[in-house]
Length: 280
Image 1 (cartoon, rainbow, N blue to C red):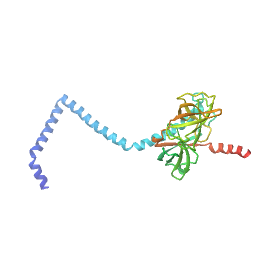
Image 2 (image 1 turned 120 degrees about the vertical axis):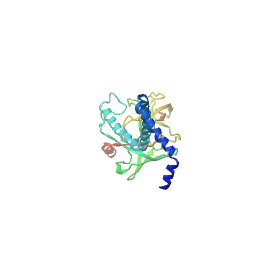
Image 3 (image 1 turned 135 degrees about the vertical axis):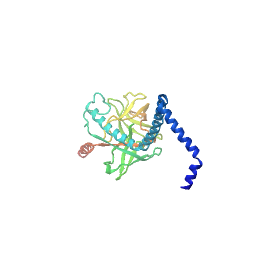
Image 4 (image 1 turned 180 degrees about the horizontal axis):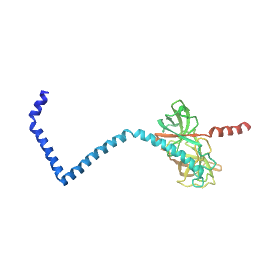
């Protein structure tokens, strides 16, 4: 306490100056319209800048939560999109047809916790498992295209056999009317951005830049998900078929979140098709 008193006594002139300066400034501001207006405007700028910086930090701190909300919303919108196009296949024939059940598909958001891209056989691990309703052979997509299929499932995690795997094969359509089909494979490719569409009938005319879509023939992926664009046509494979090289729309090196496709009619479809094998 003594030290504080000595400090105030020693620097009393400075503190008196500050006191009189503030008092004088208050008199000038209160008794002059121009100065009062300038002071208020300056104060608003300072306070506004302060609150702007505070809000920026708050937004940054809640970025992860906001990102999760956006992903959940995207999953809901994707589900609603499937419902809309199922009801109006004339306006958008690329995604589904009127025979599809409008509520057939659900989409579960998951985070990527491990991902290989440059191996001969690539896999992805996500943070959703059987407790979230994930099952083996479910399709996995991203907002840009196809990712792969679920391979193994535990309670809290699942592994995905990536599209960048030599054993992955996906049925695709090479035009908007779905009159021509092929099999999308990565094969022995060493590049993560390219794949091949094999066994396309020779009479089908293709052009560079033509989009490639999922066919919807399997229970893994809805019809009409864009998977890539043709970059090389008419690669002869022998017989009555040809291959094309495509640029994949999925950027595997940047995967952070994916959507697992839950087909509610998958079990019914597979059980019915299994009867054909039994009768055969």
